[in-house]
Amino acid sequence: MTNLATRHDGRRPDQLRDIRITTGSQQTAEGSALIEMGNTAVLCAASVEEEVPRWMRGRGTGWVTAEYDMLPRATSSRRRRDRDSGRTASRSQEIQRLIGRSLRAATDLAGLGERAIYLDCDVLQADGGTRTAAITGAYVALRQALLGLTDDGKLERVPLRCAVAAVSVGLQGGRLLLDLDYAEDSTADADFNIVMTDAGDLVEIQATAEGEPFPRHRVGDALALAARGMEQLFAAQRGARSCKVEN
Image (cartoon, rainbow, N blue to C red; front, side, top):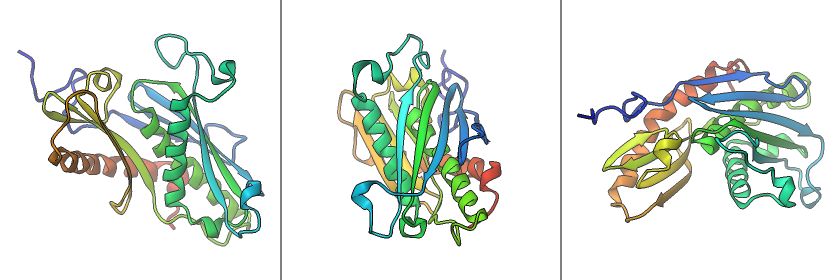
């Protein structure tokens, strides 16, 4: 008989996959972090430009944005690069907008001055949760870049309001599962992508029923489960070298 207390990979329903964040993964970037969540791996690089996009010039405020892509063999079969079709895939656009919104929520854009930071999030290996891993890793890369600007005397302080991270939750067979891998995500009855700050505030909730509608109270249950997982994610961010200096 299958043990309902554990999942196909042996984890408890409320258990994250093993997480590792390695900073300085791209030496030429102002900030970088390789985040690994189980078999999912995303390389996040922060690039600083000393000007904002044309439409923002003269406002005295900065900009933080993101790009997201997946390497052709990040999955079990080869995926064509977006450039081959001449446009960014709609899924990539949706995810990179989510990453950008999440990081801007954590950033004091006025304190950044008229400069822009671009976060490139490239999925090296995909086994579920690539967007949530990208947000969690991109924050570390962003902070590393901002620390560099303060060290160089270009900023008086690190313009961050809070830390931000993200995790997935799935509803499968009536039970909630934290941090879905691909096998779980592809068979879930409903899935949530939840972005939170280290103060426990919500940045964004994405919730989708894959078939039958799910009871409203399960949203609160999913948020509570995500909050427990966030504690470990923020601890992993703090443990990365670039996050040891406090605001």
